[in-house]
Image (cartoon, rainbow, N blue to C red; front, side, top):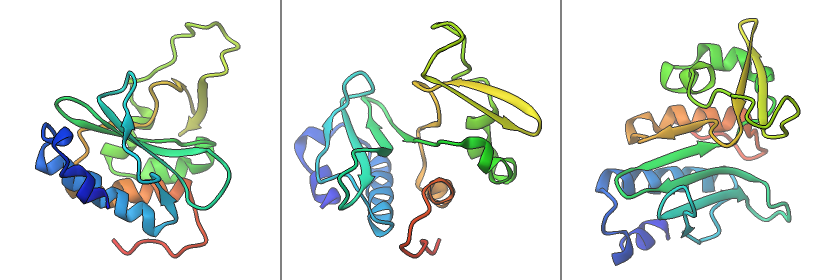
Length: 167
């Protein structure tokens, strides 16, 4: 279904590599019990379009991941909570995953004071890290070759009763 939708003329600006990533990621999440609901909606301020992934067949509207379709690229955002509990995984992850959690991008500037409800605070290797929740855990220009790493990260934070993917 997603591959068919991406053939619509409104997506002519999306590269074939980005379409391949979107298709592969979407199909992989569907195997894990997550869905974008068949809707590619407005990207609001994040890009032209957006896919929003949620657990399939549940009432909760909790968002697990998004793909932002921008004019010149795509971005993958995975919503990660209780990051400290996953510190061992992050520490041993490849740099393309680890750096999103430990690098400077998205560092909290305390723009809303010290009681901001949008701040993510976690600890890795004894270091407290504060990130702005509006900017966290986004992977710009994800590549199909790295899909196994993104799926492993997703499965680390979203363990399901469905069997894990064979990558």
